[in-house]
Picture 1 (tube, rainbow, N blue to C red):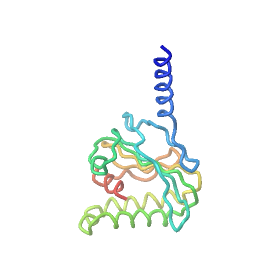
Picture 2: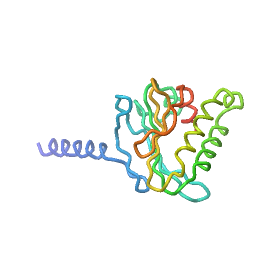
Picture 3: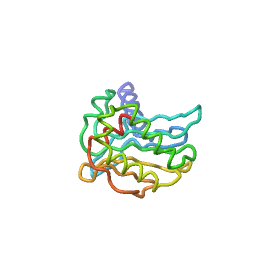
Picture 4: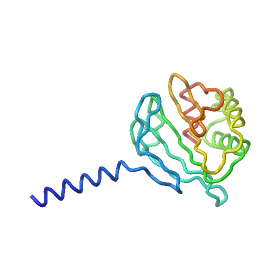
Length: 172
């Protein structure tokens, strides 16, 4: 009986620990969120550094957890990249980094196909202005709406159409 109770207690503690928020450099990522009426799970979180400076903490929310990049890219439905800023970053610098990431992960032909979406992304980032330390910047995809940039809970700029574009952002 004691072994049974210990096993129940440990499994309950493991479930409790699993349901806890993940803290990355002081940025909290909840284990589950709702996007477009669908529950998403935190797949993973980490820190982006540039020239030894910690720039932001990011978490990826998806319908089904996976350790496989192709499986994550193939998932359909709502998804979110949640970013917690660890330092101030100007709009031009942020947009430039996104563009560099797109260029590093796509062919010239693919980039040409995304030209209107990339222009909208750049305009949206410029409308955000400076992302300040502590700001929450989400890249959120909902099939009916497209990709939205949401800063501290407020949508910014126009929705960017195309699930393929959100997948391009994920490749960054």
